[in-house]
Structure formats: C-alpha cells, structure tokens
Length: 114
Length: 116
Image 1 (spheres, chains in turn cyan, blue):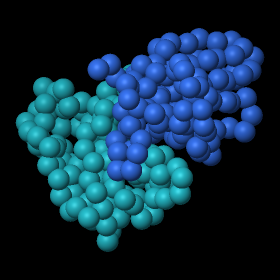
Image 2: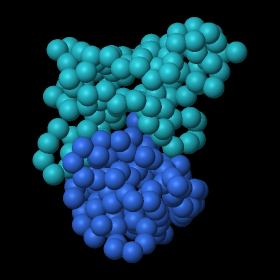
Image 3: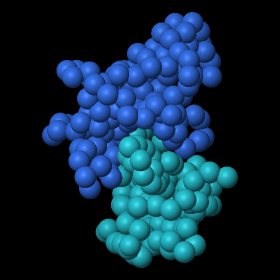
C-alpha cells in the first residue's frame, strides 16, 4: 500500500457533528500536512504538523500525530455544510534533493448534510 | 498577492494532439511542482522544478511528457501525442524555497484535460 492512506474513504455526517479522518504512512517523516479539495477545485492547505509535535489546533481543526504508529488524525469540530469536500494527508519526501515532493493519500470524501 | 495561476482551466484535445499547460507561481516563489489527479484518486507527483532546472522528474512518464520553468515566464507542462489515458486534472503548486520554507505548497486551480 502507498504512503499516506486515509480512512474512511467516505464519511457522511449531519451539520454540527464532529468528523474524524485518519491517515497512515509508512516511511519516516519530517512533517505531515492536510489539504482540502472542494469538488472540481484545487487544493487548499489546512495545517502542517511537524514530527516533533503531537497535536496542533487551527480554528475548528485539530490534528494529531503519532510517529510510533505512523498515523495522524484530522478532527473537524462542529461541522458545517461548507466543510463538504475531500480531505487529503500528504507527506514530503524525507531527504535528498527532492524534499519538497509531496506524496498524497487517496483522500476521505466528507459530506456534511444541513 | 495573486495565488498560483494555471491556464487554461479546461483543455480538450483529440488523440495525437499536443497539450500545453501553463503555471505561474505565486509572487516570490521559485519552486514549482506538477501533480496529476486521475478521477476518484489522490494527487500523484510528476515533476519538481526550480528556475531553469529540473530537480526531480521521477513521476513523469518517460515518453511524451516534458516540463520547463524558464528564467522568465510561466512553467509549462507539455504532453505530446496525447492519449485518452492522459485525461486528468493537472495541478501546479509553488513554494518559496529556501531552508525551512519549502514545506507548504500553494496549489493552483488545476487544468482539466480531456482527450477525445
């Protein structure tokens, strides 16, 4: 399986509920990033968590990172219909000259019903 | 400060034609990345360029695909003799470059290529 796999593949919730998405990766990382993609649009960077951090908050977003389990989770609290989108985790290449190269997971499709 | 610009947003080509996709990075960004997204899939890295240099093209198909980022002007992803399997969304991203500043990539809206 590939670096950066999310689960679930799809998540459907009601407005106001919390949404949790998980990501697993295989190689050692310097940081892990989460992106959002609205249907037919480009990606928007949400949050970056470094390998020496365990938890990070940004507004309604909470990201955790467990390097021992090689996993991360993205929690969106008090979801809104506007949060409906695909969410991807991405990890940069660990070293060498191409450390900027991002490897993306398959994504979680989140649907928030009004 | 305009974001990453890509054009065209939609491109239709017939099999065997050439597709040229353009990307203008954010102002002050010297690193450009191209990614391809097939339907219902995540993004796959294609190539990483700095001004006038290809840093990593490990994700580029060996034939028909090429990329450049000239000293002046946008980065170009060129696909020669397109085939139906090239139909996808192609995203460009840019980053400032420099130690510690490469981590966040800013994405453009993408070019959706349809090969008939």
